[in-house]
Image (tube, rainbow, N blue to C red):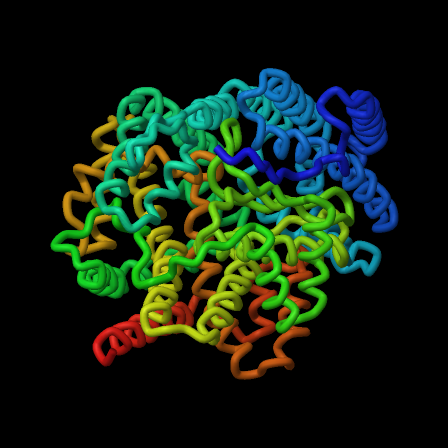
Length: 596
């Protein structure tokens, strides 16, 4: 395990879980919420309600929500890197319970807003005073058919602590406790899952297979626990969705994302119908690796000769350089994020796997979470998450807190764009044939992972929820559905996928953390590919439009946002443009291999 730990500084929030300011803030938030409830509850449906009064109330609601949000953000960030620490776990639970209590006090506000008559509501949203809250009001209005009584909504919040949230906490802590005794070159090591996973990027086929086998075996050994967690969280989502009158479980997520069911269905259909490009690539990869068979343990094995490793500092310098060429302000944002120690870099026991970016406190810089392991993939992942940090900066700069949220449908725009910027920069450097082959392979594999694999996850998730309508799925049924969808995507390119990979369905956290999150990756990825092509056509004229796009937050809906750029998300041909771009890159790789 790396002794040189690079971790974030969370003192923007508090000086540890025992900081006396936490108690003061909890008391202040509680007092503000109680006062707000006494002042506002029962008065929103007054026919004489003025827009100025509603604006004052909305600002008070926003202030309470913002203070509670950053307390919760701190608890989540510190927990993500210390989830085996009993003191941190206790603090996380304390904040979780407190957050629910505040939500219980405030839940009346959005419910009573929807009790306003249609005529009065239209007058209010057209008033200039409420301009910054118009989309929030409209979006809340769309939830009217799905809202329950205040008491029912409060019960749902309370039961989640020991229900879905409790199972999710168990999942996170159980996974993070895993360590693996692993032998390489006669040397035994005790590794975290992230450290063990890094061996899947190595050149040694035997070690790759052994590493993936160890991870999958750990989950297989504990699949009774994971199945119980899995089915309980998914069933909870489905029952609540049905109680709230959603047509399907995914409709609830689509409303949160401000996209229609039709858009998501079109996206999924176009992507699924294009799986042949994935099968085509991995059959080529099999030849490039000189393997008779390709197994899932070979999925991440580098093609060609990209053996260069990057220190974290080298990766940061390169990312800053590339972003400066696109827009100098992007470099400044990344530099500030780095200088303020808002990036947690080093894999270690008790730290979650994966990568994410979370908003900073108030108008400060975002917090980035990665597990950096010095390879090209780590470089691109860091660029991806810093893209999120760039978007977070602009949203916090330009929007009030109520509009800081971001639809998952467009949440990956800045991050994927930054990845493509990095890819194009690397492609233009002085590369040998093998390096060009390797770089194209990395680019295609990352895009296949972000689009096609996430689409396969989406199909898996949809099928499991459909099965939940009829019965509680068994472990074998869950694994078989997962294997079905993976086989559909990889076609004949993978050997023994079902036997060697089916339990991996329990490794993927998105199904539990945010049901139906995964399609957003595909949506954003194909969307960004089209935006990037627009950038290549317009160059510097595109930059201010892109920055403006990043700054909208949730002040307007994704469809409205993209309509400004003449993009119709319901048009299958739009999504096919992104697929066609990836097919072009696949042909470019095939030609490079054939003619060199």
